[in-house]
Length: 267
Ligand SMILES: [Zn+2]
Ligand SMILES: [Zn+2]
Figure 1: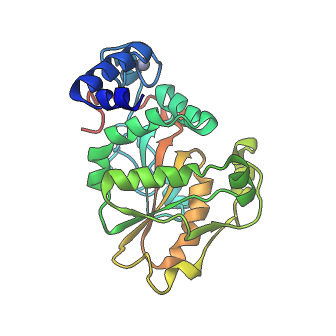
Figure 2: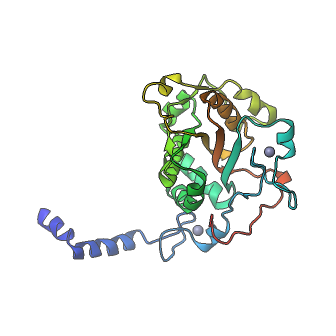
């Protein structure tokens, strides 16, 4: 057996392995599993992936109506969020929505990793070695139950793609709150009012803040903005500008059709 395995490790062996793999697992679209020439995203899924428009309010990230000059939106002129700026990479719909749900429910992360890889040029433009990503923490009981911390995984992948730093220990969750998805409107905001705090223990000694000029609170989906607002509010005590970053953002009805002038993702 060992002799045979030795043969498989030759160049010819890898060729046989490659053909066997292609036979057993033919290349398919990561999103819809349609067979295709190579691994990746098929043209139909690609057409359904929408980048969040960059012409928006710099504070909350809402898309601005066409023809309106870039600047603060009406919401931010009245009641600005805690963060200094908001960036979302993708619109939460179609293949992006399916990919995030599949990742969160089944742990299948290949499509999400593909999206982050596609966003690499945008991430490198946005983030540098002076940026620190802090994932939005989950309640401890929920993390123990699922064994997963999606915002932390996302922060790690974003940091790897951009060369910035990340740390899951600094921003902490306090107490237990109802799931945001089970609440609506004002309840979503009240639910998280006192849900986050900074753990000072990690900011002393060999501080992870050394050389850091900007903090980013990271989450997978931005819906009402309540979670990120309260997490950012807790992080302002660190004494650096606090921004928020989401992989995807839901589109409210008032935002109309998302600008789809891009032909190539993030380039
Ligand atoms: Zn597809
Ligand atoms: Zn705004």
